[in-house]
Each structure stands twice: as structure tokens, then as C-alpha cells.
Image (cartoon, rainbow, N blue to C red):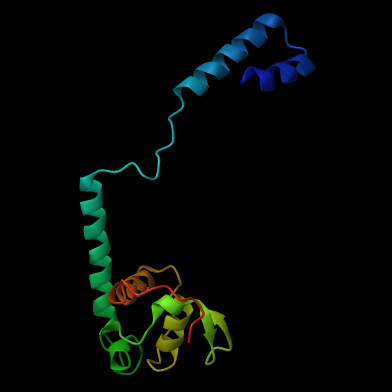
Length: 150
């Protein structure tokens, strides 16, 4: 298979047969010893337990943040959304009138941090943002996805 690509290139470069054979042998050896990629569904029970612990640690951090003042005033997310209720993460992305466009959940979280909480926006991929999103979604686990719903 590999030789079908290499031989024409070798012929164009004018390499002699011995050199070409050596290069083909080397290319074949490299291909034979290349690590095969791991499949996404290859994991153990130990992997699942470890990943669940890590996820729940992030959810716990999000819960702490959700119940903390994230801005310059004393307002926290839970003052409008007790226990993550009424956040409806299952409906994002959707049009948000306050922002004037279709946004994802993280953009809406930042809008709340900047406006009611009077804080600075989080980087969309920061650990704090991921933790807030994880907590909010965890609180609504089991609810059917409904992007765009109001």
C-alpha cells in the first residue's frame, strides 16, 4: 500500500534501485511500528469511576461559585436561580432579548455575571466557567434537550 505512493516519487527523483528499496523497507517498518490510535469506547470500570469523580469535583466547584458573589456587589447566581433552577440550560443556544442575539449558555452566564452581579466576564473556556456550566447542567440532568425554546 505504502509503496504505491513512494515508488512514483522515487522514480521522479532518479534514485537507484538499492536506495529505493532501502527507503521502502524503512517506510514499511515505520508504518508497522506506528502506535494504533486508541478507540473512544476503550475504557475500564476504573476509568469510569475516575472520570465520574473528576466530573463531580468540577460540579462541586461550580456549586460553590454559583452560591458566591462573583461581582462587585453581594449578589450571587442563586439569588435569582435557587439551586440552579430556572436557568434552563437545555434550551441553549437560543435568542436572548437582553443580549439581542442567539447565544450559548456560557454567554448567558457571562451576561448575568456582568449585569446583576456587576462582575467581570469569565473567559469562556476558563475552569470557573466550565464549573458553573457543569453545575447548572447537572442540576437539570434528565431534562429533555430543547434548543431555542422559550
